[in-house]
Image 1 (spheres, one colour):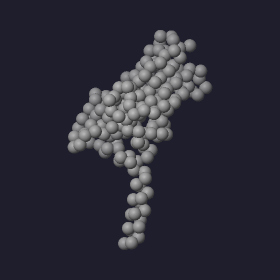
Image 2 (cartoon, helix red, strand yellow):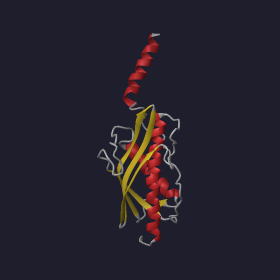
Image 3 (cartoon, one colour):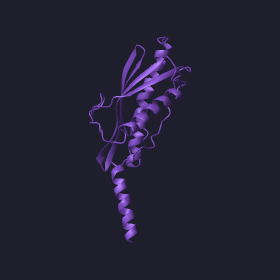
Image 4 (cartoon, helix red, strand yellow):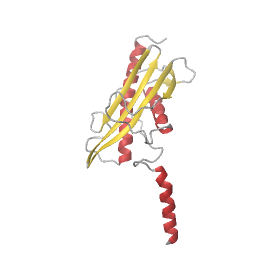
Length: 193
């Protein structure tokens, strides 16, 4: 019995440092397919992504961003970088580190919010600035469960961790899809050399 208690205490103290707000470090963030396909015509792009998440707000939301989640640091940066690459490739673009066509992206916000008691709402939030030659634009998305393009409905049943991750993925898809749409329009106008 004493050994069982010692093992339990050991496991509890080890988990105390890694569990925060119901999150486990790292994780399974889903990359959703684009809802509307664009054709980038096999164009090759070099990605330069900067992590510039410093503040507690984004332009399209009045919510204060929680800067103490698993999305801070490498996990959020790696998720966003991989999702941007996946979105370009899903729309017939190619990521090529030797290409002279450079997409510069500055990630300025990435977070999730769980709000309410009993009947709750889950929000995913993302903001980034994109620069391609002379084109530059800020993209910002706040998605709440129940939105038409959200991965979760208003009355969906999911774990807290799963719901937060799905909504961050959904908000990211929305903003990245808008960026790829603009990139395709930019390319079709012949503004790229």
